[in-house]
Length: 282
Image (cartoon, rainbow, N blue to C red):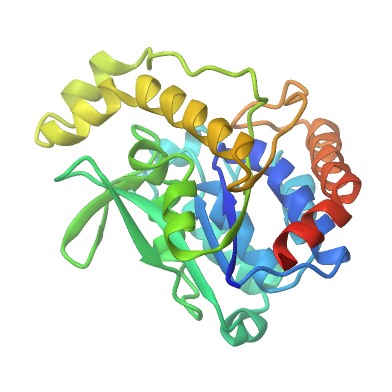
């Protein structure tokens, strides 16, 4: 019986997912397979490395820090991202709040990050390297259009996995018998078309398949969520979603809001711990 965990992205709203993961860790629940998108997997690796509350410490210490995110980073020619790439993906895990690479490497299951291939406009699913101290695959999965540079991995150009497959539950079901999906938006949420499409068409004009995927993103996302909830009703998987995002933005700096959203995720996991354990054990 193979078990899987799916983690939606959402930048700093993914601190809800971290709360869920920390609740699972405190409950002694570890799945065989973990797949995530953007911040979902960037935070999710701390679940695999068995470091509860590590992400909470990161965001409450550094979300207000301009080195972590801010317009100055975007205008820095060495960075070219709203988020401080070296600071967030190297300095923090390697120096300030150490990531446990040994425990991560010892995990016997699979860990995948979703990225969007600009040439095809579709999702690729890349294994997360166990000892990459620059976290290149995680950076590519987090690379929001217009706010990050394009990443080249294996000769292919990549950006944010949320465009190609925002909630990779079908990928998980293909690999696992039991799947838990953690969302970062309430169940009633519906995505709207991107208001930056004019700029996106111009910026990525050399990648027409990617532009098309961006144009269809809201429709595809909303349809995928409807299918996800239908699969939940049929008993094919479990879904954990926030009641509210508590006003937390993708680039939230208010540490109290972030702490409260983490706590909501933690409580959501604790409240359903026995249900989750029984389901995963089949």
